[in-house]
Amino acid sequence: MDTQKMKTLVRKFNTYIEMNKDYQAYSDFKEGVNKGLDIAKYTFEENLEKLSLPGPGEDQAERIRGMENNFVQLLDGIALSKKPNCSEERLDGVHTGFEKSKKIFREFVKESFSQENT
Image (cartoon, rainbow, N blue to C red; front, side, top):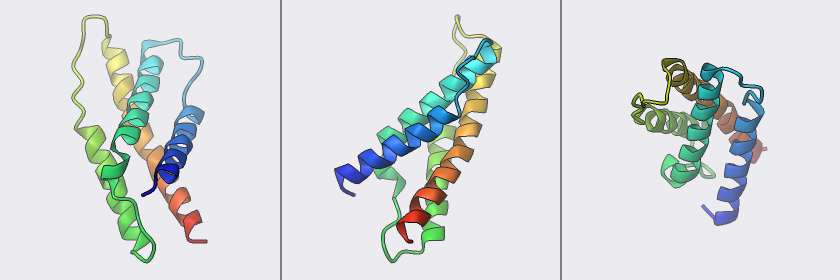
């Protein structure tokens, strides 16, 4: 995959994430959700090449499912430990942010790669 296409995908996914953030996060939980979304955003950017993007002529539905599974595995593999300055609510929010980002990723992939074939 060429560098320009990768940059475009990263920028587009970042936009999806930013649209789903709560910019008036006045609780530890909401701040945690935003943090989880940020972690997902950086995870996507750092691992884009490993997600095996669908190519022309390949079974798009199968490849998209594979990408979703790879992304979910990456997020599920992130170990979060409670830190002294991190409340339980914030940690719960991070996990909620991960779950939210999985749904966002699913929408992003379906829209991004279905447009490519039209």
